[in-house]
Length: 114
Length: 114
Image (tube, rainbow over all chains, first blue to last red; front, top):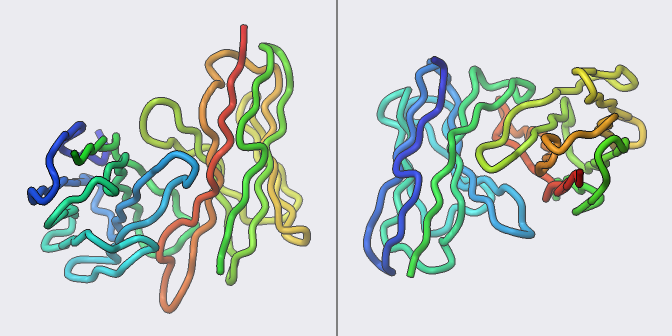
């Protein structure tokens, strides 16, 4: 089944403890992206990647890192999480670079930083 | 600055009513607009609109784009409780050689009461 998977789905952690949220897609998509969703602010892009070893900042990249060593994986790294990074995170992928292509979203990761 | 504005932010109607959700945009290099439905999980794709005046239809849902006035509407007729969700409008952003990601509106939270 074609899908985008994220792990973990739920995570409660403490300030400053490094964490990684994994994202994997099995559709051979070139483009992958991370979003965070917050009440009243909607979905905002954190980072995106057009292909392996190519990553760029989105609208809200501060406090996050990403890597794209393989086409299928696009992990999101929080080196020193802070409470303002408590949010719902979505990974998404699409085939090719044309923005008119539909993006497929993962199931989401709900992160709480205490 | 690119922006996507949805209205209303919240809407409560009774089952059987017809609703119209609005999305206006100010985006450079506009090429397409996408509608997503988000229930208690990841957004799922509904429509992609690229041409002005051509209605896209799927069952009780339909959508149309007006590129001159820079807006789109999503119509739902004969609403059912299962239509309760957040409806998201998104426009791909472009710079350089490809689409960087999606700019999302804040969404319309639609509640259908039995």
